[in-house]
Image 1: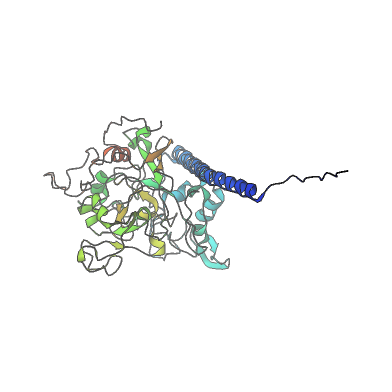
Image 2: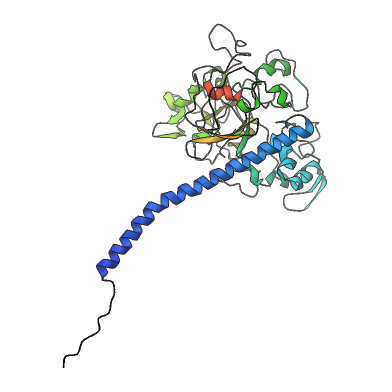
Length: 417
């Protein structure tokens, strides 16, 4: 009698390898979709942050009948940086109680008697805090979640002023707009060129430094005017949209397309840090001599875009509708005005907050007009002189028109579709 053997069912080595290979291929196909889904979720969260900020700004306006001041706060009385903030607080400080940050606002708006390490400070910091770059003042070091975009990976260390990804729009003219013609003691300048009254014509955006804006001032319509926009935090990798190219007076005497020559030809999204461009000697510091047409790249950790949420100086808290989103930034010097682009780590563009509270995604390819036009406030060589641009439509196309509040431009596109 022949005995039969039971055969065990199982995979051969070849079959197992084939299955593993198929799983690997499927994972490889699925991973980009998972990454895209994660970024879509982060982009949605960023949009929700902006909607909350927009609602907070509208509630602020309902309460005080104006928008919060950028570069505001307490005047420089000569009593020292711990007892006033030199009129440099950003618009985000005043917005705090309207975005459910009442606890942080209470710390700032009252005398604060502690050092960063928790020890007692005598006398305490004055109400409304010290200068916004003071790294011993814990409220400035406190990160406000609503002011950060989840797609931006750059994080502050514990001893630095916390970051922000949302900036106020100052429009398409930059001449002397960093201080609005008012000094840090609150005294308006009477200069007929750049003083308080003279500079008002170049304050073409919703926000103007050291001045309040009301919704009634936005004559082009709340739904047609940008109030705020995204900005990346400079990560010190020379990424152009987060790096500051210092150009001294050339930033407003020359057209914005001057910045193209300073991009790295091998990596167009990065600046070329070879400061011997054109065979000229390198610059000797952030604002030093020997710059000529060379750029100087401000490498200080504290001088990058978006690195101080409490600071109302331009590179930290505002942007311009001159160069397209995600392009490059040029400033006159540290703390000075300049061409500051909207930017984000979202693919293809950045969010903006319209004055009516709507959040819209603007692509990098938005029509941005004549990038060879010198910014208004300086002589463009067209025979009109330095004052010839006052009251005129923006030279920077649809992008520039969206940034101006009262230039009578006609917006013919449905931006929210």
